[in-house]
Length: 451
Image 1 (cartoon, one colour):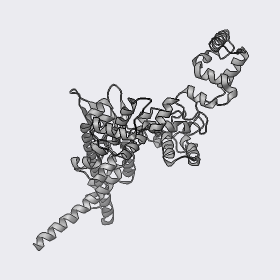
Image 2 (cartoon, rainbow, N blue to C red; image 1 turned 90 degrees about the vertical axis):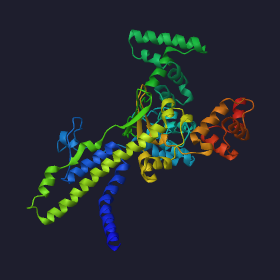
Image 3 (cartoon, rainbow, N blue to C red; image 1 turned 180 degrees about the horizontal axis):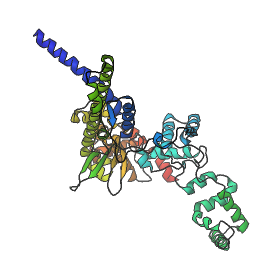
Image 4 (cartoon, rainbow, N blue to C red; image 1 turned 60 degrees about the vertical axis):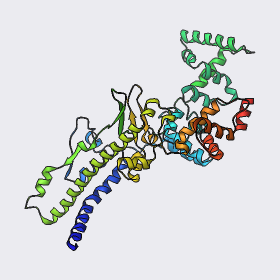
């Protein structure tokens, strides 16, 4: 018994010394996307002679390979996001509004326009599209003028706020395409200008009517506006993400997940260096140091294997579970999937699943390719076995069919949820999800309809 116990303890200690460095490396890699993983291994390979990167046809050249030694990259100017953060911090708004504004800055293009839709912004967040939409005007009130616009027309109108700019606002709003043909002094531009003048005076029937001079002055005023508000700022391309997984539709109309790239194929042990280490003439002191580097390289490659395997496990489970949602993109089709269920199903710890799901993205291939947060497939369970997003969608459906003169009270919504969807929810819980879905109170909805 004593001998057996000693052997068991020795075996466990030996195993721990092998697994612990690998586990450390795996924890580091799990929070990284594939590009970050490759950069990390490239840095390690420069310091470790036992780790090498195998050349690939599509490998990108390093800056050092194509730029001379004297080349000095100048520091970039402040990004538009950094410029806005200080203004957002100074606003007298709620903490939630401040968090939403900071989040919305991530969707600004290099020109300063808000890209995508509120539905896309809301994916993978705890906010509803309505909550995000309500904060857009606050973002658009910040400097530089025109920031946060969704189109050129809206960008110009945001910069034309003065009452003295009424004609310019009219042109930007209703005749933006036509005024482009009126710029210049060519006979054609003058003719187009006269035609536009007749069109405006004929439709508005103003007294006194707009003159050619008025029209030219308004067009000149529009030409002074900035069509790209973020032109003079550096750009942090935050919305661009690196998906590690992709879901493709198979012949039998089911979604199948795979790794977009496998960094493990790019790195391997340097067999030549290992052979030199095994030579008898190697110095004992150097040999000990090199053996540690070899162990580190082996641990790193083992961790990389596990990184790929764990990502694929979690991705496969979530894609197989959320087939209906991937087909319909309807939040009501989501199956509640807490991280604990994922962990138990794939044989990983909750912490590992959390690291994989957080900030990880899935490319959904098909006729309309899109990239979604992996977290949007891993939704918690709320009351009645529904997700919070599903309860909000059900409330939106009920409110959409209510009478304008007699909108539902929260108590009536409680009863309707119970009767139609077999959901037993307390009134205060309904009120919470109603607010999260951007639905106003009963009195506000009635007042709005009266107006």
